[in-house]
Image (cartoon, rainbow, N blue to C red; front, side, top):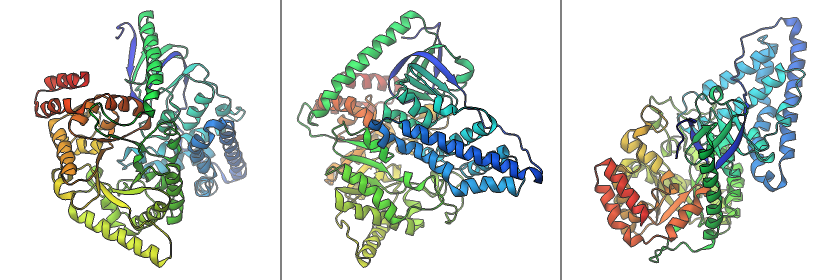
Length: 582
């Protein structure tokens, strides 16, 4: 139901839910600072301004962290720690000090030029998760500049209060999210941002309805406007009429009721109506997200992305540092399996500058990434494997290799894993020698030859995000062509079916960990294709599980086959509706 008299904005939904209320518009600004220099006589005065700003900003961030409720502090405080660490980082601060003392930059220009230098190093990064780590630097720089410029300003970020309002901003920071949650804000809207930013991850963790990437949001939404925020569809209605408000209030009420009912589903066994045993696992990006799965009953972590340990730093994490982090995750999951995907960054990703990574690829998506990077920089890979093997003593762990395209990559990776084991023996360090090794199936060549690849690995995990992208030659973040990104394209579905059948034939597990797994539109279709293991964002688990345990898989197979063989988009969508109605 849409009201034509309402202004409607569209953005990227990053945290589901509906919020209805008054807008609170807050603009951080764009860090537009003019190039400005000082004379030598002013160095002392300028340095004092700078140091005062550093101390004030650090104090503000610590105050916010200390105000976080004990119930969430342990899990979400670490998001703010990234900012606190940056404001405390000696290299970052010394570079700014150097620009003032040696280059005679004004304090504002010293901070801004240091930010621009860091931003430039992120320019060619393709991976959205890694690329959005520059957001953390940007957020800190904005606070520094605001504190520097507004001499008599009180602690603005500390005194914010978003009680009972929908926050509308140009750039959502983790601090904003935490304050909105603590002050009982209704929802969040941002002009800038993506699904994998720290702020977006945090909104999902705290289950705050949120939409990002809303173009011109601040120029259209005014302070005090009445809004409907639809975090399920990414829609924003400005000053809607009563009928639309009434409709969404009803929708919100039924959604809350449905959520309450679905929570009871979590205690039930993962078995379909026709007694098929199914598996439901979670995808995690950060240790903090373990909080979200506390109340969810799952079969394990089907995908743990390890990249978070390699970002926001100037060197690679040590073996011991990784071991401690992985051990913590495995122990928290007790006997449930944790599948660690090995490092999935490369020449197009942000990694330490002091280690040679090769030249930047012309097309980063086709360059030195995933297993290719690990095989090219073997010391980094071996260190990570040693840490995973050691953590394997504390629970059930599996190793998953990303971006596999040929048999040699599997063979070479296994050889390096054996080298890692030999080194651990030499160092007299205890480890699990029997960890299973699987691969991500996210490249068409891997899917096509799945039956042969199955003889070399212990399990498959289908990464549909990249599989769709590579199969259809579509950059899913390119606004000019992402409308062609279609998970139910027959070519994509055929590849998924090939992989599932290859797993069954060779008696190895097959899971799917792409966004399709957490999309209720595709659950019955995937079940009909023979998929029995789904790994998704924890927030999607109740709804997907409810569909799975209330499905008769045997009745879905025929329609799934029809959908694969259908060439008409309109008819295919009708068939999808039909299978979802069964």
